[in-house]
Image 1 (cartoon, rainbow, N blue to C red):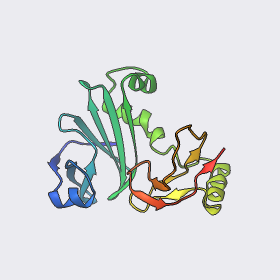
Image 2: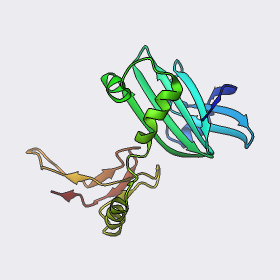
Image 3: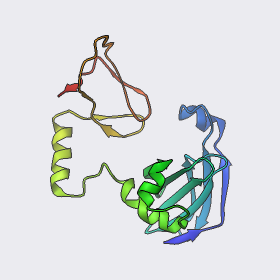
Image 4: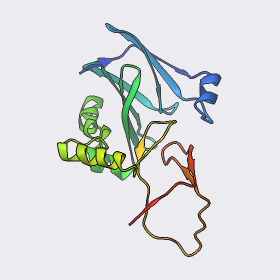
Length: 182
């Protein structure tokens, strides 16, 4: 894994912010290596420490804010976002083992958490394919996440208006959709 130290950080354009339906501009990180120029929109705060590493064509961007006590890792393959993970408060030490680790070590420990929804075994892959085939899962047209909403218990004051929103980006995915129940 190679450390990228020469990079630029800027705010995204107002047009990009509006197109992505964000209320605040995200940060864009730009750097150049042997494969060309890379630009990624990242979920970092303006006061965060940012560390960039490359390995096998993937870009690992670690953001830390010791004052607020959080750590985030975003992974990109080319221009496409592969995944991300975010830890805050007690979860940082619980997951990483101890405080004040080197950025490289933090990335190595968080890499396994970036792909939690992708099954690692054939059994998991078959289960995911069956879920998609049975139309139990929803695919968000905005963010591309695949998720399943399960209704565990109807509350006393429950009123179903039939609107379903993506739990990741809050986009209205479908009106009058069906929710699975247990």
